[in-house]
Image 1 (cartoon, rainbow, N blue to C red):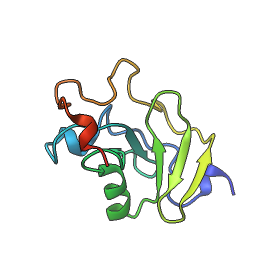
Image 2: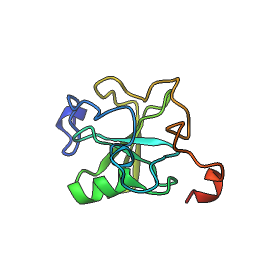
Image 3: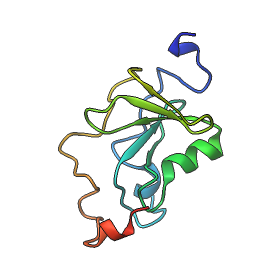
Image 4: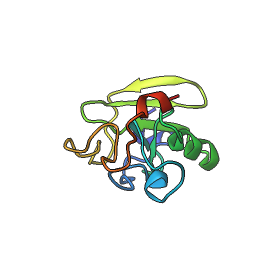
Length: 119
């Protein structure tokens, strides 16, 4: 099956922004370690190591099983339902947050003890 025919993947869905939409909206402590992109709608959420785990939360609540990395230099997807890993599928650019954006981020929200707050 071609990638554009896989239920749960929309190659034309643009990313919702350059950071976790939910953290930036004030949900949780407001910072993330890594970012994930919903392959169905483009929602940007934080990874499961981040305090709020918004990426997987969105995927489960929306019924959108595929999450893509939104990190520079990474090109993979994860299906949260089947726990299968995929590489090489090109989503609509941009495919990562800006390279000058810090990890963790955003710069002004990351606490000094951030490493102790990871999952």
